[in-house]
Structures are given as structure tokens and as C-alpha cells.
Image (cartoon, rainbow, N blue to C red; front, top):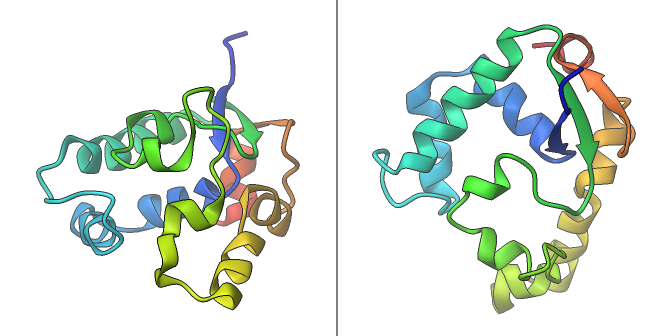
Length: 139
């Protein structure tokens, strides 16, 4: 059996959105949240096409992870702002800066990897097939 691909809990919702939507919608969302500077950014194409390839195989295995980079993070332009050189997550305030109020930061912390994974019935540290994820996430 192949090694499962790591998938952060909070990327479950992103992948559901990618597989339900169009490339143009995905590009607009990444531009809106400053994950890319243009729709031609290689990360835009990668983060749209690669999940589609992975989830086309119903037997593809994913290890749901929390607080560590996954296959999306490794290609992301913002990775250096989310994780230190040892791949440990940086405090959310450092990533967001002072533009957010404390209550906004607390709300974002509730939407962490573990919280989102559990919202859909997944547990960090467990392996799920593409088919199981699609069924639970309804995409």
C-alpha cells in the first residue's frame, strides 16, 4: 500500500470547494485572500488540479493532520508565514498581524485543523480514502 498523503483538517473544506467549483472561482478566492498575486501564479493551477487528480481515485489514502504542513502547504506562497523552519505552526497572531481584533483571532483559532476535521467526522492522525472523504464532505 502507498504512503497516505497528508491533508490538513482545514483543507478539507477548501478541497470540497475546489471540487465543486470552477478554476476561475478558485483563482478569485486565492487572489482575494492573498494566497496568489495573479491567476497565472503556479500555486493557483497546482492547488486546483492536483486535488482533482488525487480525488479522482476513490482508493487514494489521506492521513488527516493537524498543525503540520500538508501537500497544499508545501506548494503555498505563504508557507513561511504559517510554519517555522522545523514545520511547527507559528502563532496565528504573527500570521495575521495586528489588523485583526482579539475576538476575530479567537474565532479563527476555532476553525483550526482539528476543529474542522471533527466537524465533518474526521480525526487527526487517522487515514481515510478519497471515497470516504467525498461521502462525508458531500462532494
